[in-house]
Structure formats: C-alpha cells, structure tokens
Image 1: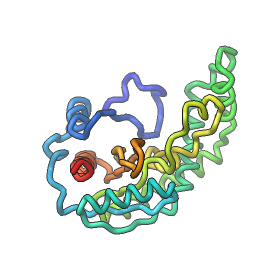
Image 2: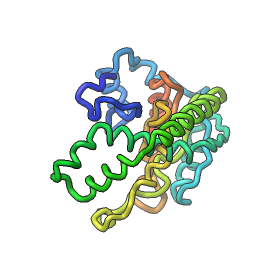
Image 3: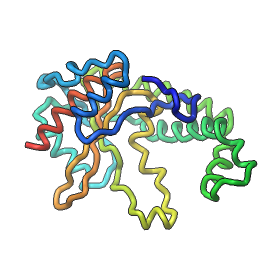
Image 4: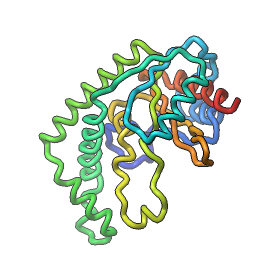
Amino acid sequence: MSRRGVAPADTTLDCVGPFARDVDTLAAVMAAIAPGFDRARAAAAVAGCTIAHVIVDADAAIATALDTAVRASGLRVREAVLDELPAAFAAGLAVINAETSRAFGHLVATGKLGADLDARLRTAATTTPAALDEAEAVRARFTAQVDAALEHADVLVLPTLPALPITLQQARDGVSVIAMSSLIRPFNLSGHPALSLPLPLAGTRLKAGMQIVGRKGADEQVCAVAAHFEAALAA
C-alpha cells in the first residue's frame, strides 16, 4: 500500500496497516487501501490450514491464553522455534535508530525537543555503519528462517507482547517499554505480514494479543486465519 504521508518517508521497516474493531472491518479497510487485496480470499475457510506455534518467553497467563486459543481453533498445529528472534529484535532497534536519526536528527539542534526525544535522537545518532551492516545480515538470516518455517505451515502464531502493557502511572514514571516490542519488531524488520488479534485472559477483563504472521504477499491468508480464531474465541 502507499506510504504517501507516512513519516519517515525513507524506511526499510514494514509497519503500515489499519486498526479495526473486528477482522471483517480490517479486511474491508485493506481492500480499500491496498491495491490487489482480495477480500473474498480474506474470508475463505481455513479448516485445512496448519499453524506453527512459535515457542517464546512470555508471561504464564499469556502463554496459557495462547495455548487455549490454539486448541479452540481446531486447526493442525506444529511447534516452531525462531532462534534468530532476539537478534532480529536488536537489529530492528539498530535500523530504526539509524533511520530515525537520518530523518529527524537535525531537530536536536533546534533545542525545542522534550528531554526524552532529545535523548533518544542523540542515542540514535551513535548507531555505527558496522552496527547497521550487522543488522542487515541479521535481517537476511531472520527472513530466511521465517520463510523456512512457513514452508511447513500456513501461518505462525505467537504472543503479540510478552507481557501486559505498562500502566499509565508506570509510563509517567519513565518505565522503559522497549522490550515490549521484542516479539513484533522482528517482523517489522523482515517484512512478513502480521496481524494482532485480542486474546482473552482467564479471570480478568484485560486482553493480551495473539500475533498471526504469514508468508510475504499472503496478507489475505493472515486475515482468513484471524477470522477463524476470532470466531473460535467468540464461541
């Protein structure tokens, strides 16, 4: 889809897409903004699909909720390990630092930034060419690893976040949230289509997220599997 109007204009990270209250609405928005998106394929039955449950470190309640959702789906399941995931997270940070510094680093000299943004941009400016070269090597390895996992499954599933988001007070107190993106930033780096579906947690009204990752160019398949999980969780 078009990145016109998105900042920064020059980026290698894939992170543009819609938010919606349900999968059907999300698919409708995708059909409106993404040329070639096939809404009928996004609503197709997926009973014969195989999902790969990626084993990651996450809070016990979130891991249990994901296990419950996977069982409720009735789909064929296999386990997958992406051992390049931590390296891909670090590589994603290096890339976004370099690209953010290139796009907005000049604003530091204005003296008009808040202390937090000023500090982030100064840190981003220290990203070295060697670090960026290593990040690109990791990008290639991780992309290949995800592609290989998707040769044996239609989609990957894993938690969106490893823990529940911090509270507003924690944010005001300056608690770092960088680690919260440890399971999603790698797929921004690799460019695989991904969708996050609300995931009920037992004993609370709070919800976690289930991330569904598909093959490149198979956005409709991701939506179709998400719709299947959505229906299974609502049953």
